[in-house]
Amino acid sequence: MQPECPSIADLMLQMASSLQETARAINAENAGQFLDEILNAKRIYLAGAGRSGLVARAFAQRLMHLGFESYVIGETITPAFGPGDVLVAFSGSGETQSVMDVCETAREIGGKICLITSTPNSHIGRMADCIVEIGNNPHKDADIPRDFEIRQLTGQYRSVSGSFAPLGTLFETAALVFSDAIVSALMEVKHCTIEEIKSRLANVQ
Image (cartoon, rainbow, N blue to C red; front, top):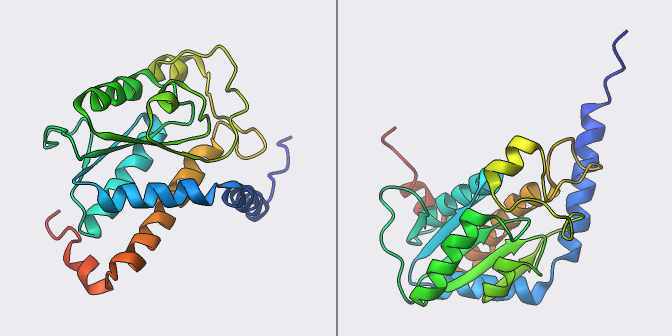
């Protein structure tokens, strides 16, 4: 006999409640600093692995819609990073090797590093000029591999929250909502109109 399926609406409400708690815990000063870094950046580069990488790509797209010059690390059309540029890294663990390597290169070049993470005290955190902590990583002290691919193969997720969603992470969902909130704030600061944004939407697909 199949077990009774829980209410999908109840699960969604549980997730929404978790997001509310996470939003209330975000440091307003750090979020404001991140907003300033975006506004003052010459160009904005986004980096992340796995689902965090998808959040980074979505944020890059939204920034482009607002008129910012934004690029995703690893794309063939991404130009050289330079001084005055800002790298925004999404990493719940702050230890993902591929993202760490990108941050080290950006620091050597002389650009700014902004980290969106659930683990501020991490390798990437120690390199970052600006950190926004989202949620609390229950595995921040665990001995888990830095390589994203190894963690995927072995099921060792650094930012898993079992009470939030099976094999899902609160960090990535909250990071997506946070990045959309930043976009809304940028729209207010830049006085962007819907017409301006629509003019930058893809029309050849």
